[in-house]
Image (cartoon, rainbow, N blue to C red; front, side, top):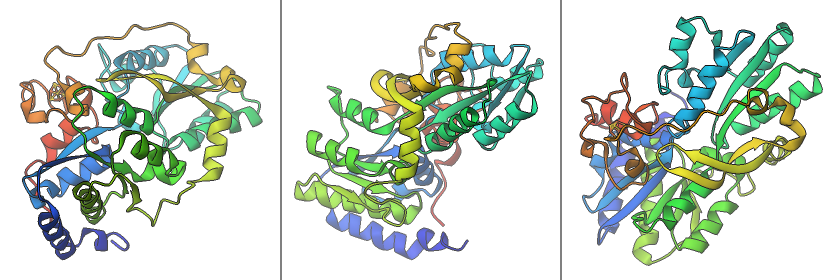
Length: 364
Ligand code: SF4
């Protein structure tokens, strides 16, 4: 595919692999933050191109995986309400709540619809004024601008039947939280390229300075990731802790100012519970006071208490890079993508799901 093949070039991958092997003098642990990067690493077998001294840790960057079970349960309860049309991207529909998922709720009669944009949900609100349309807004800073725009538009159109169930999480606080853990083993990060294309890079520069870790903002193709690993490794070997941008074709220092402006108008920062990790201060978005009438949490105020994870699930340790999926006794046995027991098996970007699907494939 045009503009993609050059970032999947086998010879270039082998050259980068050689440079990495030549540069390394001792063991290092580098975490890729983003679930999309984890997916590429496992899909293309990139770990097989790395020296044994270099360990990749797969981080918490899958927003579907870190959405708390209580919020999935709440989504299901809202979807079952008689006058509600519940809308969501497809990947949320089969994420298990404590007793069923949204697809099963639909099979039992709930009006649950897949949309490709929150603007489709706004269209439904225009088309069905006697229904309450709820959009399940899940994601990192990458999806937040379009979701903010939908609220802004609904307000402009005077719609009173459009609501957002907000489960947005933000990346820098979880990186800081990981680095502050007493058992932290992360020595450098590959930063989330798509998030930085929206938010810019300054928050990541602050993390480098505060915690003395190298961060390399990385793209998502195999060559991007190998190049970013090399850049991070060279910093580690030289004792540096700078921010570097491997993904310069998409990320500029300031990010997308228009997107940031609509996000800061519609959302405000709030504490978020991360499935597998627990609460992290100011690590998510909620609707700002001015837009509170569009908040599904206000419109459907019943509180659903948090459910405990399966007692054998070690996804919290996996999300912190402390363990790998095959170390979980349930991996590929009781726990599979069809029957997920924990956070990291529920989405195509989850580390356990990717290990299950790709662990034996090679770059080609
Ligand atoms: S394999 Fe399943 S049970 Fe084990 S850590 Fe992963 S999600 Fe949890």
